[in-house]
Each structure stands twice: as structure tokens, then as C-alpha cells.
Length: 88
Image (tube, rainbow, N blue to C red; front, side):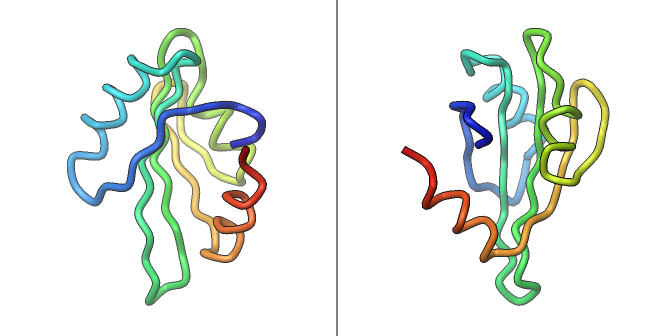
């Protein structure tokens, strides 16, 4: 995402706990959990920050919000797939 390599996982439950573990293990201190809601044509993202990296700054790049340790944003499914196709 946005030129950063991050740890990301799909989950519907325990997103806060999973996010904290991902952020701790990530080299850049950002962990992302996402869930796809096809009936709403949305993908919801939960972001956790650690190691001095801000979840808020990351979420704001995608129109979201939050605070330093936790943030979130929502994308359409089409936008999500556009982003995935650009990844190396």
C-alpha cells in the first residue's frame, strides 16, 4: 500500500488484537486487517501503528481517520482491486 510493504490479513473478529500483533511484527510498524462486504460493495480496513509509525497518517492517505495507534478507512471493492493490481 502506498509504496509500503505492510503485514495485512483478512479477519472479521479480534481485529484489534490481530492488528497489534501485525504492527509489532511488521518492519515498518503498520498492521492492517481488512474485511470485504460484497453486499455493500465495500472493503473496511482497520490499521494499527507501532514503532513510532502512525496508524492515523496511514489511514488518512486513504480518506480515513483515527489516532496514532489505531485508525481505519473504507474503500469500494473496485478501488481495493485497483490497488492490489498495482502491487509488486
